[in-house]
Image 1 (tube, rainbow, N blue to C red):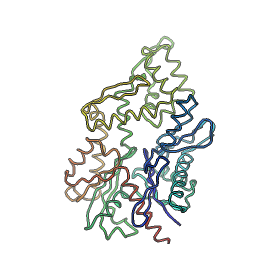
Image 2: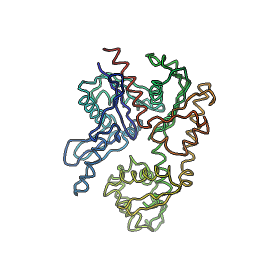
Image 3: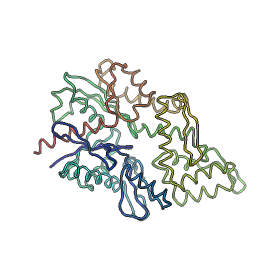
Image 4: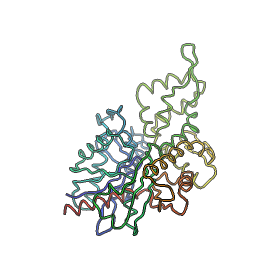
Length: 417
């Protein structure tokens, strides 16, 4: 049985294994090794697509005046949601969380088998530290449905530590801070070249912890504080002689990029249409309807993500999205004020894991800072404040977890061969 490592992420997913003592990654249709964790259901075809290929097909259909279909974003976030039973996809039927994840993993499995010319019946799957039993159960079921006979779970920050360990010589007590799209994970672990060959690392792991807040939460803060008003938040409307506030549950869905599509249900759309003639800010309500009518959710959050990245280099930028006539300025000072509570919770999580490990920052020899959200300057400064700049290493922030999972998978392949 051959195993492959898969970093199934909230924002992006990668797969890897070791070939000729070198880590190799599975390439997607666009030739890259990392693609968004997205599924596209076309309106007039049963052939679903994943990643950037799915996004391109979706946007092409919209540009050509087609129905577009359904773009499902951040499907990993559905796994721990006990309230999510299924979603109805026009032309494709009923899909549970397991079904959606299985479809993505099956496509990735097919790509891997085509690239490497061999079947993969086993998988080493990364998982966040703060992942519920329901989420783990659903992810395991999805992996089996995708065609994997054996499913092994590995904590994501531990996998990142395994990647670093390939270059370690002496015994080192390290701390991994993995800041992704949906979760922030922390691990204190002992690593060394000798330990890397051990099949059981349980005694080396001193403590793990994490929270379900990371990059997506930072983007949500921007929506709530800078853009929500442009879609009706804070407005009022008249109904039966009363002045009522714009529904909060609609703005809540709007602020989560993977939940914007949920506003395209009959009840919410009827509510928004009924508010429009009686709103004190009809232009903002029209903008929300335009967002839904043209399925601009993904593009809007791409614009937000672009602005967020530019704030790493500039003191002030504009969140621009011309199809909806949006150009909202945001400064670094404003952004950092928005995310201060989330950064504080991440700091607390790091301190909590150190305490569980019985370690002080001075005891940590190296800090592995990884994950896409680790590029946010305020979070960089936060980690440096705790440990000191000289200890912080920044490996490839997208592939470090996947690299570790690939090395773990190779051990199982070695044992089985």
